[in-house]
Image 1: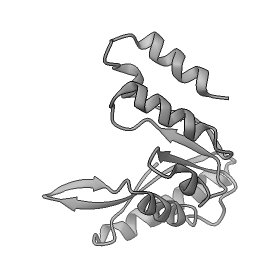
Image 2: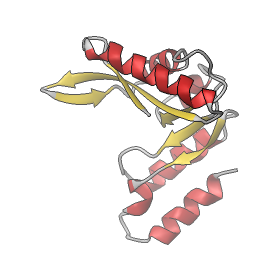
Image 3: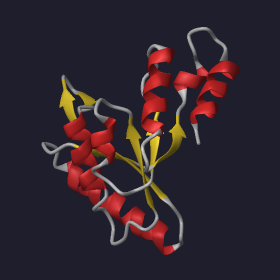
Image 4: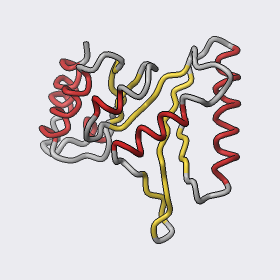
Amino acid sequence: MLCRIDLDDPGTVATLAACAQAVDELAAHGLIAMLEPFMSSRVNGKVRNDLSPDAVIKSVHIGQGLGSTSAYTWMKLPVVDEMDRVMESTTMPTLLLGGDPTDPDEAFASWEKALALPSVRGLIVGRTLLYPPDDDVASAVATAVAMVR
């Protein structure tokens, strides 16, 4: 579940409450909550996620406190600079988000490095694999699959 946290938006309180309730309801049924927290703000009327390591760490700290238990909660996090420091901020199992498509070699290298971290369990990627610059989806998927342990 996407959990945008904008400290200047009064609606964030309702978002956090709804996410906490969803975490509790899923846990009550033994189901996993996949939480995707972002520190966000509005810039010229558009929502922008802060992808700095410190902001991602802050979003993780807020996100892992949602609900009465974290027993069934997994994080979905963007791959950012200082990913080792980001992952030291949580003990929750984590899946990596693919992010906006960029240079595929750069994306694959950053994913591979992050996948080596102990609590990272896999990838949740979309556009980077579905729309590679060379249109070779099979090759892009095969490259990603080879990285997952």
